[in-house]
Length: 139
Image (cartoon, rainbow, N blue to C red; front, side):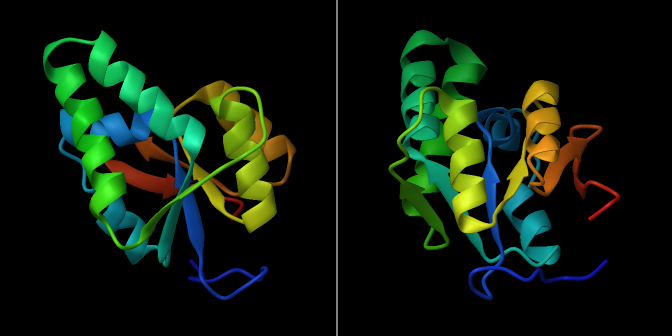
């Protein structure tokens, strides 16, 4: 699998959806390392995703609450993560808009979001068996 894409710059970017960020904690999956091994160097998030995680850490209990808190800590503490303001309604729309503007891949286990991203020509990845990051085969 080729480790780079043509795009606006040479740094390969990925947007990780809320559900995959939560799996990092609940399923003990090292998503960032796996994505780095696939050639991704920068991880970008629309502010919508951060706000969704903030709501989840207040509204959920137990493991799910800790997962949201852990995901927020990762986003805020890693040098390879950036949060972007996006003018869009809803997290999915913000993710798609940001992915198109930055030529970034979208990593999600949300089937509807994956389908929409593919229709818009965005590279899509997901957690196969909730363990392994896999990019769509047509990548």
